Image 1 (cartoon, one colour):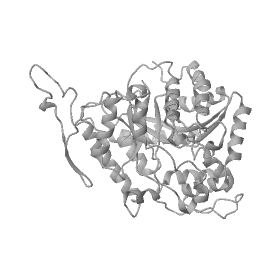
Image 2: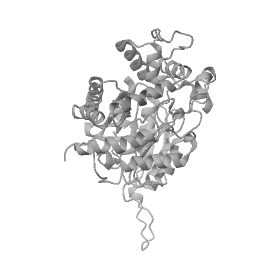
Image 3: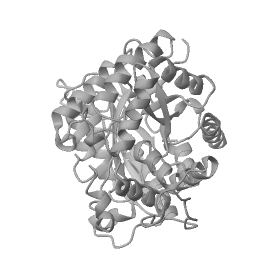
Length: 442
């Protein structure tokens, strides 16, 4: 069977553009409108996507940047694990991936939640492992200072290892439920956990049988040096931001080399860059949509987003002037800071031009055009080894997801690049990942 691409739908309530909620095609109360999310998940399932992907933003109200923040939708949204649990009940085949940080929770609790969900939905769950880049989130958890970047990744590595051990606490078939003998479970198939590491000490096992897909799929989104190493060691799907095909190829090659060094097969990881597609029935229609969104972007919104991502307060600077020299080190998303600075330098972008880029794609690959043009660009990245698939970031919801499913997916199918039906029932099967044996920890 020829190689086909993977697709996930990265859903932000009103869409990925910061001004999407102001567009006539958006749902204004989308962040807390469950029926809206149901329709989005079912649309993605109609399009045969591998999964819907739900991010998390718990930084709260940015008082210092209130003029920009009051014009954005981040102050109102569902908690991801609650949302994907509910979406599991209104979908049949599509996977559901939710974001939970390793910095502000504990392994046992997270392992139990995701394994419960994986039993409920028949093996369709994925955990997006993040370390929390936003420095403002710590105060919600009673922590006065945000954990340092390197320390967050050290914690995440041991955290992931312990979570996988809990997921494998029982071997397959351990719960025999034999009425005749009166034996409910076989003690010899109880693997259990005995972990004593630098940061965590835990023992015992979960009160949940092993997942139908072996374990929930682990997704990881960091592209910094420690983020890449964590992905090579633990991730099965990687969400990354790359601006062009050459950089995407280099990123995927780098991860594969790291995997070979530690003895992991490269087939056990799917690299799925984010793509921000402005789809129109014609190129002019797509360009018009881009112009509409640019015109709806308030400068305070663009400045706030760009200031956060670069680690530099840009308010009060000339909008048509260059980006100033940033701080050498930030304690937030270091890979995204680097990407944006390189983008500004290579393309000689002003602050205004860069914040218009950030307000939509936030540093991810932006494409626009008619369905054939969109499919051409996705195909080029896919066949040249830049990606195993894509995390699709619709600019406006529901409009942009409907357009992608109705216009682009058929074009990809016509080229033999994407499935025409689901052949599996679990997220692993959709992604083309093998079911891990019990105790098979990367």
